[in-house]
Image (cartoon, rainbow, N blue to C red; front, side):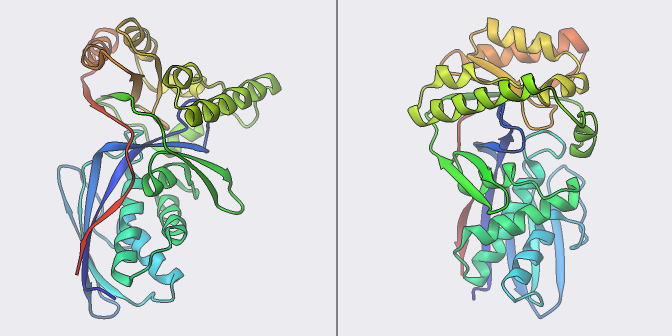
Length: 307
């Protein structure tokens, strides 16, 4: 065992077009940074740094909750710890904020316990996700933990396909609204048309092939969805204008990050121009201020130090 550890855990984009609850793309930034220090048995405390108001109760904060669950999975449920969460990803943004905290908390505890199996980190992180979303989702946490492009190919066996994506720019526009995962799931229908399901299967298959071939233009061509996106865009004022403006500025493809409200575009060039066009479109069409940034696919959560 170790006494302390520091980890960083990145943002991610779930669904990534047609891969509802299955696809995830890890981003290089933004990130959460989580520090953990062992305390006497049974004692737990949490501190949150940054501008976001998050729970400091160890049983309500997803990072500490995931850390506790990892310890329980390893038979060390009585371990005490002090955790500091430096939150860099806005909650309710559609950028896997809770997944980053969950993955970071689980990985931090794994680092202290000397555990190297990422599969156990994955399970504990998904349990942390369940705390805030009501279900044990693996798409964001898989991307955050393993990095690159991930596919939850078999939920029963926790089988995660990992693909190293090609290099491309990801332009993110986050309007000044919040969409909670529970609300975004509530707008989805209980059933879908068979034609829509078939269409998504085709797009998803094409996406995986394009990722393995590292063909950015083909990846962009499959960045669409008929299952969730048509229902969720009602939660994002001005989405169509933002999408059209990004494409006109040179984006290769546009979609919604996770459950929203983030809208993202991918491109090989003209990233700054696309970024400006997306921000202007949000302001023009809906009067919303949008935080924008440019990033690239990332390599996943990391242990920065332990001692």
